[in-house]
Image (cartoon, rainbow, N blue to C red; front, side):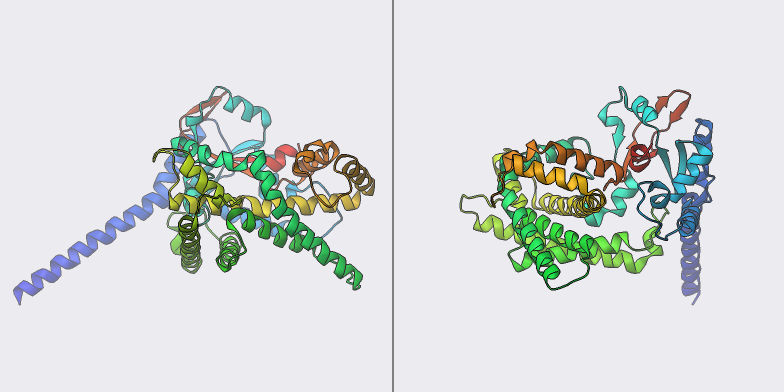
Length: 424
């Protein structure tokens, strides 16, 4: 009896110590550590909106977002105050360079081209990295693909992937793009002929772009390809249309249903892609299928030694990266282009005349002639400036960098506001 009593006391003591240790870890992660970093950043010469740990400035950002007017007031290119209302307001108080906090993670906001140029001058590539907080948050989407890899790993991946996007390979993919685009335009013609008063252009282009990405990535003709496409879209919605606390310690525990759903969908996508890769490797009879997966498999084989080849796991990550990096960005850029051309019919006429002159009026598209569409490139560049499909760039400083009177401390995340810079 005495032994059982002693054992229970030992158990209670151990559990108490464990709970105290866990509580201490939470206190350090939520308050002590970020407050220490906050004081160091203040001494380095950088200001910004005061954080409230452990959420940092997340609550304030949500308030600004809710208070920004969602109503339609006509077409305006001045989108910064609507897209990033919190940054728009903070720049009025703190300038174009300041520190804000996502949870306990400090971010250096940069909307000053001169500051960015000075900071980048003479700094080696190893001084920059990808923010760890985003690598963890977006792991189900990108894995360790080109978007998230760094250093020698990034160089190795780039070495294998770059040849897949050579002009000759892109030319071979052009027919796949034309096929899906023609199908979409034929559908629009039928809808207009049947008296349809309006077409949801954004939705239609998004679907067509997704089909093109799926075809050029891993082939959508198989049922497996269609399943991957549907699940990749589900993953995108799960991660970007849910309420998340990026940067808050243990944030996955705060949104357990969303975290588990993302993990489950991620495993299903990986399993489907691995199955497609294995089938492609087994059926390879010396030929190369002209999609990204086929070209990467051929590049890994031709590329040489084991140190440069991509593993099946890495091929999966690159296929996912290609989809997430190219689907919505392309669809949004084309949607904005059509909207702006609709409001400037004189440019529609100029582009049609240029296409007739450079490309001709035949049904066959000559990929090599696209570079001659100068006015088209002007229009596309202006659309990308006004409505950048990649509205920001994130990096993480790997060593202290001095910029004038300011020191950007090692470990500081950077948020480069592309929209603000393009509209300045």
